View 1 (cartoon, one colour):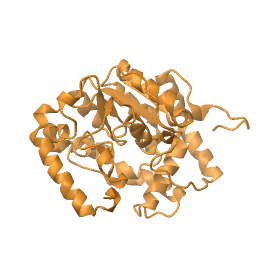
View 2: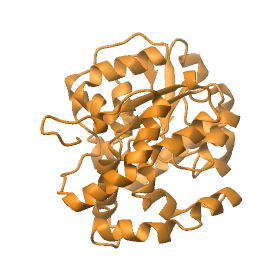
View 3: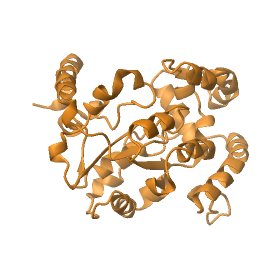
View 4: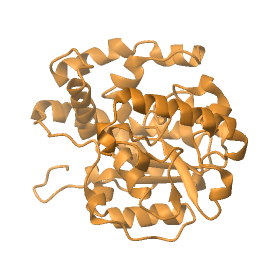
Length: 301
């Protein structure tokens, strides 16, 4: 039977049964070996499913490979929006410990990087886990984030410029409210923070305040898409695994959508806004990033 033809109610009921079984067997399920913490619209989905092509990287439970593509998952948003569900619920998403000898399993939630409490929670609950992060040119990331919201009819403002102008008012007080009330979930903070989520350095520094430097591996999306094999080989070594060949289809982005032109004036304003954050990030990482490299025309790519 074509899995994509399954009614959503059937898929949902099946998920409920599987999750119940996973919860009952949670004592036999270890937590993640790695967390892929973001960034949203930065390539995390493509990277995660590329890693699943490695024979020693296990999927979450149940395996995304058993589900229709529209129901694939790479993460459960535990350390951001579902933390109140507790550790037993979280561990129900991982394969049984007996299957994991010499293998690695992780989850990826792109809101983890930006959420003000996620790093502290992860450090408390899974302090030994390794942290993966894939970042994209923040100007392109912001525009992609807006276009995604518009495609899903989740953004009422009809231009990117209007959404940027509304962002400060939309986000006013939301960070502090999340910190003050751990049960509070903010749609604006997660989904309408188009500019703010690309201010990578302070968000990453918050994670580095809770995990040692040797537990981080940071990739640039531009480098990953240019050479997925090399990027995934680097991740494999970071996870203590031997590199393995990838199928050629891995270079095809997940969640891709036709691009529309970003106004040059808007691009310039955002580039100027992000310049100090990018410089801070390069200092933090000790390396140059692709989007700050001049291309052959002399412009910044």
